[in-house]
Amino acid sequence: MLNLDLLRQQPDLVQKGLQKRQVSVALEEILRLAEQRDGLARRCEGLYGSLKQVQERRRAAPAGKHAELEKQIASLSEEIRALELQIADLETRLRLLLLPLPNLPHPDVPTGFMRSANRELRRWGVPMSFYFSPRSYRELGSGLGLIDSVGGSHLSGSQFVVLRGAGARLLRALVTFALDFFTREWDYKEVQLPLLLKYGTLLAAGQFPSLEPHSYSCQADELYLNPGGGTPLVNLYGGTVLAAESLPLRLVSWTPVFHRDGGSASLPPSSARLPWHQLSEVQLLLIVQPNESYALLQTLLLQIEMLLQRLELAYRVVMLCSGLLPFAAAMTLTVEVWLPAQRRFLPLAAASNYESFQTRRANVLYRSPSGQIEHPHSLGACALSIEQTLAAILEVYQQADGSVVVPKVLRPLIGLSLLTR
Image: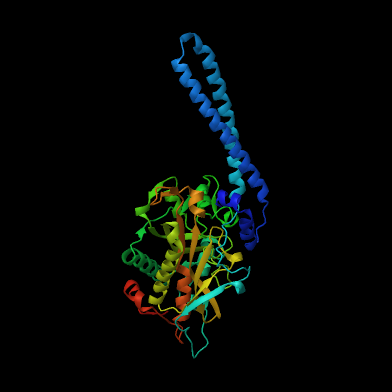
């Protein structure tokens, strides 16, 4: 959620940031309600002072004066209760106006609303070249009996798949490889999330309301399947005050994500994105001190790059333009691999700095070294989109006869060096 103090002190800056994301909003109503709430709060505070004085006079007064003073106490208490109800109503109205507003883009984020406006930062490795016409992951997966679209359709409908045999083992190996990488080498704490989440959890993470129309829900229990587009892990610390010395906190989780339109909302829109309704991700959350967040975003990105380098997948790093930023992100950096058959880049990972947007929504606080209570910054990442990585491996490591070489780092986990029919 946007900082209301920033909105009041620098409304032009906020308006420009929202326009950079093609969001138009009348800030005057928000500012009017905020001023009205603050005026009532000041009045309420004054009445509390008066009430305290009358109560002290009541304790020191002779018995004959008690009735008159108690009448004053009752009148002041009733007025305070009425003001508190008005303040609560205004705070609810303010929150409803602030919740749909996305985070403001960082000044370095390029302005634009199409993929062509994204900024490529660097590349690693050389894309694989073939002396034969490469097959797509769909052809390879079907031909090797790894990806069963017909079975998925029978079970759940179109754009669901069943991974069979070595395909399922490859998926499991990728999950294990990524989790071990972050927990053993970078000291992330592993957690496993429930598949069904409360509306408030997804709202706090900044996934709702923007992704609500694209999510799957269990209406009877008011629970939702994680649509991606961020990690709900931040809500584990909602309503808590963290010590500065406990930061940064690092969490990693493997979780399925579900999206009605197909693909993962954690990754930027792309015609190369897998259209499946169910994918899975290794997600990361860091809660950090504000002055460290952008340096740690670069560290997080380098960790993700190291993961892909061990898989020996050539990639490029891209900064998303303002129009493609996730709802809660101030900056998002993606890592994309070239698909030789489709001649397109496929995003496999994305790292975002949410600044204090998520922690303000989830009411996560920390005590700064100076003793002030503030909102920390949060970083989130889809460190590896598992099925998309599987698709990239099939295309990049394919052989002329339709077989696929298993990346060296995965061979001990899958027990195979070559995927054949």
